Image 1: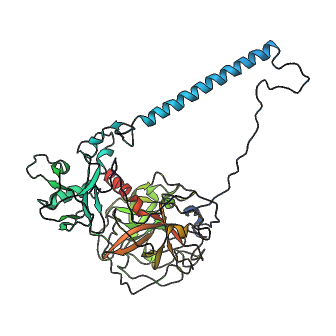
Image 2 (image 1 turned 45 degrees about the horizontal axis):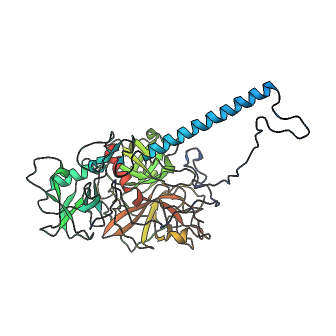
Image 3 (image 1 turned 30 degrees about the vertical axis):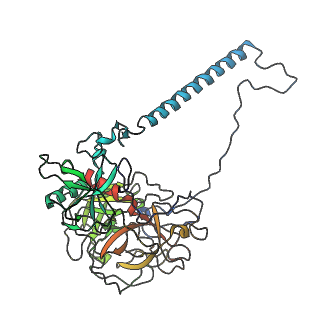
Length: 490
């Protein structure tokens, strides 16, 4: 059975996505940053100003005057003007038609079965995708050929021949191939383990290694097989992630609550500008941090102004001049500052973090991660403990629940403002919520004894208000984008 058929390869992630898209409608939304450090505050949560179309009338050339005036354009001068305007209109129409025709032909240029390279528009044959050879100028055809599936991290490879994803049989597998696959996902110097597990994806076709093949490229050693002798497939862990000292019995709150303990949320970072906490973030590798795109809008998109602090609970222990400097800031190219759609960004550190009991990465969600509609999750950060309050001195955390998209988009709640790239979490009755200063921080859930990053704090109307839960960027939608950025910037 083919898995997630489609061409070119894409990440179909059913982790938690709304069933349909709703166009934005006007709500009332407050400032996201409160009253502190206004000059460095990220922009407000979505603000929507009504747009009223205005129509200005423009006089037509040689318009007919009111009778009983003489016939229009009677003089030679007026006739010449009329002819000139008429010719101009004809030429303009012809030019517009030519442009539209050209654009139509451009759009049709890569019609099936050919595929388009994203950066250049170059068309290539579908058989060239994931064949081990770079055919696109920027190599897009070889960037999305391997992925990890489900909570068991099953390694899947995209087949250009069958246009579908297939698990890799454990037969003849070795860790050297696992390292190569991890590098293709952007894990430069990171490899944890690989092992054989029972396949739970429902596949009836596998990719197997041809050990006798001379080619050194992993994907050229793979071939299709309807049988897997070991009856196990490769489970690949590129990094030891999602391990926490959190005890499920304790609960604290971001709004109105108590503090977290060292090691509870070891992926949590505090992102500073000039010694002041601005946003939160989540560690995913020793060099990469996930945060919100609205945290790094201009003029905060300059990496030189940012410092990341990890493994520290109290803001007063984060000294200006120490911490980890940021080398690169990458905001999602489709981020919309008005709607906060695609509100995700990456920071690459100048020097890698050293992992220990207090500093560890969280796992990125894999395709095939099926979550419950009201899955229990946790949020954490140094944001205000009450609306319009100041940054908290200590790291706080709270348990929240996912809220179904149809409920969060109801008129009583956010009135269709939540897109498929967002998820809601919290309580409709209020009381527990993220707040200003928590932006960019993690929304995590525990599944298969592993902590997964399923959201980053994006926006909300106030803090802990009734029918105003927190809204988070849906990280499950952006997993492939994150891997591509890691690979391209390694």
